[in-house]
Length: 199
Image 1 (cartoon, rainbow, N blue to C red):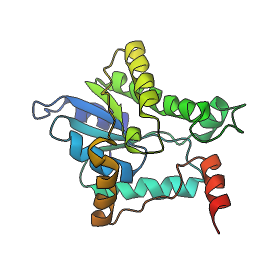
Image 2 (image 1 turned 45 degrees about the vertical axis):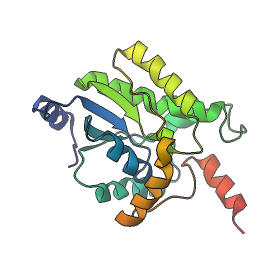
Image 3 (image 1 turned 135 degrees about the vertical axis):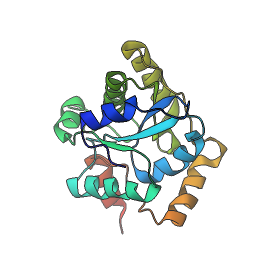
Image 4 (image 1 turned 180 degrees about the vertical axis):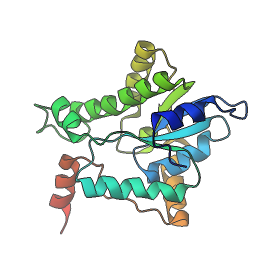
């Protein structure tokens, strides 16, 4: 179910939710969302939030977005695709390597927007799928999430979805559901790294 307007989201949030707390789950991509949804669905009423201004090029952004249809009928919100936001915030960090402060800034951009939307529409919690990736720093993700929780006043769900073979399970689920798995994180810098590695 695509929630395509603020009015539709307000309506959804006003409906009863099976006595489960509501969770706005920042979704970096469908592959990472597979196992995370399995891990959280019994505890929370989940709405997926696709907000990823870092993704390059736009065709890849759209391709990744369309894969969410294969996850089932989870409510889905798309945030604005605003690459300028990403480039402005990482200005001066372009030459830093993958896994550096540039990536931490990218985590913050996406988590902060998630926290803002969560508080605006009255979600009980917010979280992200980012920590399932073996290439992402879960400690830093959780540190940023907790800082934003204190700043915006909406609780952050601490997570390290890599545990219990979460990443391996996501690979299996992607095969079962026929979900496209991308070969780079998403930004232009990881895209260029991928191209350099190609034979």
